[in-house]
Length: 412
Ligand SMILES: [Fe+2]
Image (cartoon, rainbow, N blue to C red; front, side):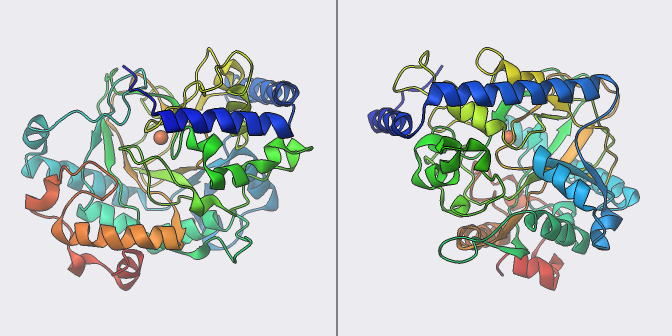
């Protein structure tokens, strides 16, 4: 059941639509964008149906030796996603997976959860709650976040962005803060825990927030193809409606690290491998069949959805990621539409640690400082429900487990 949309949000949607229609023929623009996306989706489907994948893949050794080819970088920039393989040795990731299971079991996670409440973050998505565990400070998570190979990987990813901005670099691509997130452990046979296609970090804000308006301005200019999804300017300045869905950090890439083997049909990530699919989403809501104070699947405090009825061209291009092994990592641009398969048809758990790329910038420093206090107490990371399960957990990571790099990433 949708919550009422506040009047001031409806007013800003109305005035934003009027302003955008004043600078751009939004119907003609949408027709151009839709035609492009249709062609792209057909191509993605053709390659995927033939057993291939358009999602770029890079072995970690190439990152370590600065040997990623220009062609691969062009593909990553086009697709907005990449699988980076072997960031951790397989045996390390497998051991972490076992350690996480033990950490949850010895601390009676399930009993504590049953005393808790339902997560309303994903209320507007059709498949129900994911099998995500609200733990942030287990030793495996802390060790993975502060690993040199992870830092190296994030430097590479941050470096794909153009940081030039009117008031100086938008962020420092060479250094990262931690954004402590949770873990997924999905059981085989599970069919209740999928996530419908969506984009995180801002729903209606993607149209009305002044910083997002600046980010997407070129989509409404004379030449929409001049829009550069990798131009960082204004990206760390966006302000989202305060809610349970808000990500207070700026992520150059969302991502996770695989702890088990998983791929198509095993309940894992699906995405639209097109970095500018957002152009379709933004223009679609400006078409005449949408009321002047509505933006289709964009509501305050919810993730921004995309669906078959409104975005058939985009849905046609949604594909599962290729099979990944323990220690591989998957990354996607913050504008990329993604979801989770609605059924896990495999035989093993599909487990990941969510670890995003959150480079140094004032926004991320502010979050890291807040987060550090939560870490020291074992409380949930500040963006998430204050379940604070780990306060009384044994085996939780402490400040003594942090390396010098780990302390810097935690602003400690
Ligand atoms: Fe998401």
